[in-house]
Image 1 (cartoon, rainbow, N blue to C red):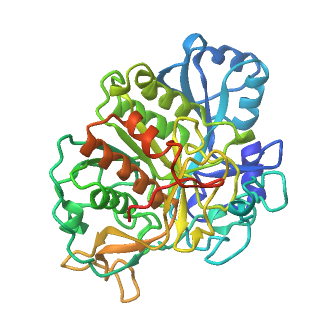
Image 2 (image 1 turned 90 degrees about the vertical axis):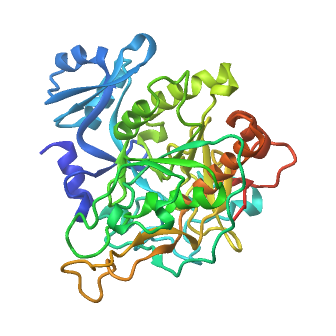
Length: 443
């Protein structure tokens, strides 16, 4: 039996993760998720893999050159991708399994609930990270929503809010890329979700497992785009699908989407990228494909701020200070969540978090049940009764609040994203919370 199969058997995977998400402990005993059989490495390592007798089914180039070490590639059909990656690293090659990341909406059955003290070490009180104390938990330890995957959405239908004011005139439009789930298809799209700020979208398919209930993360990108539209009127939002309806994505998928969205980083088509997903990696090192893609996108802006791109990401919902990616990258604005009474009890935190914003019971655009109903859905099905608006919680929704603040400042001042971030996120006089970063609250 392969190492991957042993991991799957030991972890009792079931539900939507059966075939596409496995879990394994690192050498330090900290769990991470990965795609079975998939290895990300550099093209120059392939002869070494052959020499040590490791086979694969296919090679997919990523189009990202890692200077003198070769081009990143994804191998599939590798019997033990974790062991293969470790063997390559011991020989000096860059290699990791294809790490899985999860949408950062609060999941059904989350072990960290409202008012639960588990995992939240109150870093606000003493300003110290809890990494090496018993208060810092392994995000995957005993969490059924991670082990088996959530089965129901935690978004709750709400009535449409009062009419919003007309958007102000903007001198400069800001185009935002949301890498997320697919967007609400036309039949499920309310008038608010089909507003003028929504540009190009990848549409999602509703109820992918045909159980007559919404999949856990359906409507996720529709909700996020609505936050941008409400807090930064005049913004233009493109949605590209990288996350499945059950909330999982991976290092390679995200990197490929980033590279495709920025064919020429010297002339960026987007000035803000929102990524409302988070995950943990072996040895807590960064995911190598996303790292290369982000570096490629951000490099031109370091020489010329007019080419700068703001990358904003959710910190995650596991009440841990363990670095969650992509939020933990130095050049990414990692966003934690606030509740009406302080830090949200579920939010991740740590010195790698840049900012915090409201993330509890946020109201935004969502799916709207088609006028003709849904064939096969019975009275208790949540496919029925969707109003086009919902209340939802998670760092998923704190991140676009910060992204929208950046967008609004860019549109009203004409400043580039690097200048705006320096002023509204890193300014010396701004209010901050220890381990949670700068407070951004425009809700």
